[in-house]
Amino acid sequence: MANVIVAFSKSEDARNIKNILTRSGFSVVAVCNSGAQALSQTGNLSGGLIVCGYRLSDMMYRELHDNLPPEFAMLMISSPSRWDSHVPEDVVCLPMPLKVHDLVSTLEMMAQAQARRRRKQRQQPKQRNEQERRLLDKAKKLLMERNGMSEEEAHRYIQKCSMDSGTNLVETAQMVISLIDI
Image (tube, rainbow, N blue to C red; front, side, top):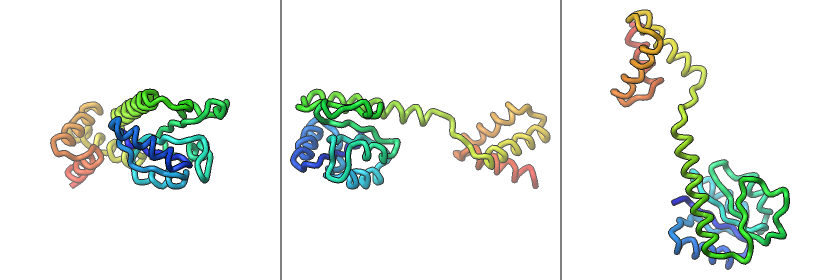
């Protein structure tokens, strides 16, 4: 389950929300009264959800949102009269008075969406910098010249060696270059 940070200006509200979430199986890692405290807690986590009110002791929800790392999603709980056309698209809003079922189901939905995004990011191929691309290209070129391979065959050879040896492609390319350039 996703890490949850609860941030409300009133300690009692924050504790009540934390208790509801904990009973529902969520991992509440911090309860905060200020946006600064919430932001400081995000530095210790790789991602999660922030449940907050419209106004915190030191900032509005919008300032907290604008300073959140991209791995965090926000659920704002407030009176619908406070919602305006300037609420960012990625902020989910729930109306006061709050229904426990709505809170729990909304957070579950947000946690699932976050997990899907993380899986999708992990499945995307890693972006290599220029130096790494040059190393891979040099290793492929050496294999093509020395062993008469096509570029695709050379790339597959480096991939297979990488998987067999448990190293990444760049390390394997460096090994190929050092072995061939002797």
